[in-house]
Image (cartoon, rainbow, N blue to C red; front, side, top):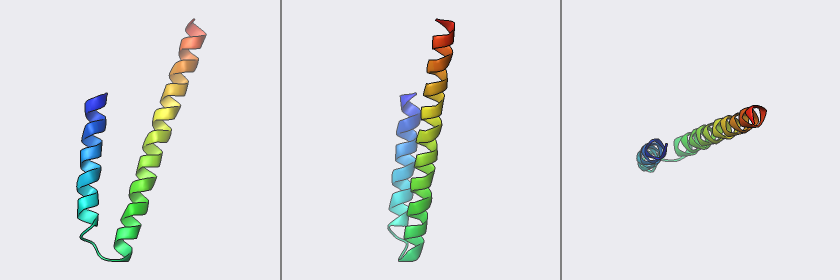
Length: 60
């Protein structure tokens, strides 16, 4: 769903704007957390696509 991704991007942008006001090490920490969150999201999406592909191959 495209609208969900757009909402996520908007939320990430808002978070990044918030981060830019935080000085020093806090900024780095939150950046790391954001990157990890995005990594987890994309990994989950990849796994879902892979499982769906396997499922469709079993059906076909």
